[in-house]
Image (cartoon, rainbow, N blue to C red; front, side, top):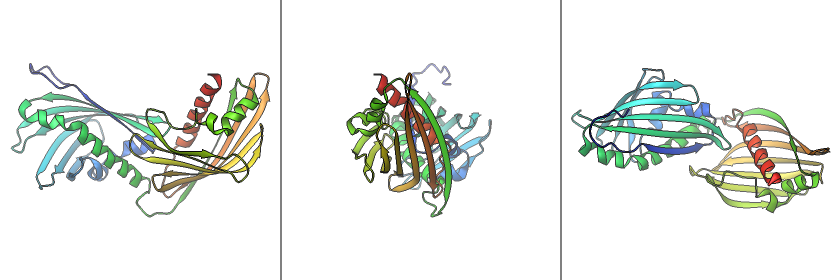
Length: 315
């Protein structure tokens, strides 16, 4: 797919988005009509009906309703279902009279990244009626952009962001890393704003810094606020309580996604000199709030930041 038809076919469409949730949650948003009806349509459209059964051969059928009330069915089925990592869906699009217009193969992959989950979509098209299909496919990129905006809102809802439910779930982790650098240099990388800016934050191609300051002393504050490529703004707000130069940092911090507080954490960072450099031990205890599901993302993200710290120290 696409099959050889003797007529020119458009290139595949590729689109990517990072969602601030674990792969399990983003994958689940594709799994039922209840979820799909909330997001699988571009801006100004909604989903009037859906029939979804996430299994190989199961249906993936969506009826989109245009602003003028016209209904447009897309009918297909799941060809591959690999939990939390990959979906492949074959779909058929018809005109208002039911005549076939084009076929499309949608391949979706889910990967854990520093910010949560990167979802990559690749769509390959096979035109049956090029005159009718070409205008539809020409608008697919923009349609997917606004559709994924809706998916981001559904993922937030699934994590309790719109439910009004109050809850707290607790988690902790311990990480130990060895760096081939003197303690004083590692300490500076952790406590000097100019140095920390070189490694602390999102990937440059996916994250834009909006606000940054830090004052590492007992009672001092730190903020790192940035916008991810999906439009979501993340904010790290910390307060330092214990600062022993070259030995220990203890701070508490809140994380917000847009205006929603998702967690409050206590972090302890300990440094020790070794024959080959510096050992850093991090212990973090977190309360994840009001339905937010961390699913190990915080520990994964911290490991990613320590990878970036290691690259900075060895540059």
